[in-house]
Length: 271
Image (cartoon, rainbow, N blue to C red; front, side, top):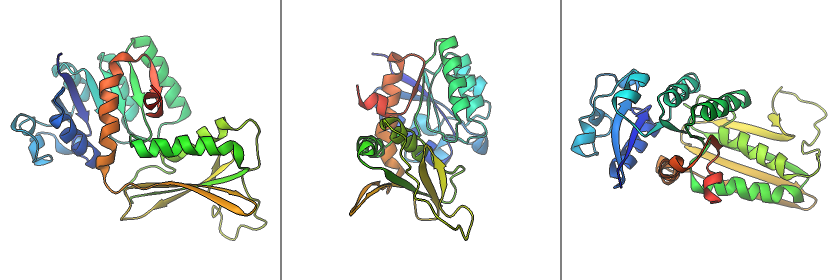
């Protein structure tokens, strides 16, 4: 079987480095291109020194469209920023390259746009707010618990460099909780007086979401359900970005058998 040819967009970032190492170590994949404006002209080995010689010798490019065509990539993996991710997805789909996207901050309109582009081009795309297997199970368990509790709140904690808030994981969790309920419960405990505006968090689908940004965190989330006399906490803690790699590898291997847009790694876990 031919190796899966992978291009990593955002290769010089923290997640990009982990993806590059994982692809480099996978026996059924080959890293054929690395793109990141922060590292243009450098060898990828400056950022991923523990990869094989061929991977270390790759020159980091800054022009994604050219790299997609020149590398003859099968799959683009994108961990960049909300400011550029839509343009990157469009470039990949236009080049006929399947896209695996972990960049968060996409709106509902963005997702609908990607779905239309993916269908029109006949090129699949996977967008996952979280590639951790444990985090996706946490979301699934929260959706299972949702019909049994009237009140729920989400607390998500990430490192201080995260570009968006709330996290894509928190947004998807709130959406899954709302979809799992047959009725429209209150969910938001009323507060008579807000001494500091925003103290009760933002609300999505009647689910309050609180975002914490502090050094020391990677990506943690807690879903708290409350009822008379009891509290149920469903939590997931990330101690290393390595936990995202099994999900990324799963998506790279599965995407060629998919059509259109797949939103959420949970769709692959159900198969």
